[in-house]
Image (cartoon, rainbow, N blue to C red; front, side, top):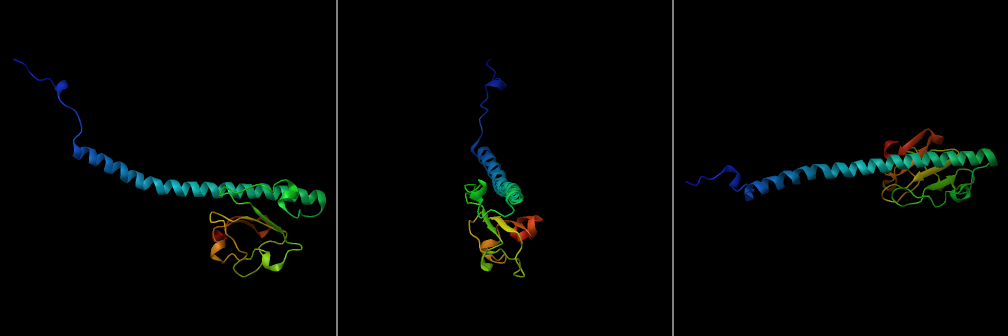
Length: 154
């Protein structure tokens, strides 16, 4: 008589199997998405650090040619340059600057003797002391170019 073949059997997923697969995919996505966000933040910080080094090179080159630091980034053609968060890079020559404007470390001592150069970081806010909450995510040049990185790591 007629015998059912294995190939004719219904091979669909049951509702339970489908729910298990969706649960597994959701769990994996829940693990991967925060890691991706952290990776993107680190990449932006690295990019910002490299841009700060490039700007520093341009500033020092200008200083070698003109025997003075530029008064602003526009003077060296970098006035419209923005960090990965869409904020302009901040530059302030130490000579002639008001004391309250210079970036200060935990001991309230200026971190540079030539010029301050930094990004305001992801929050787009910054104040001169490194100890302030608004400054903790800034990416800075400190110790006259000996340190590049986040304020929280300084």
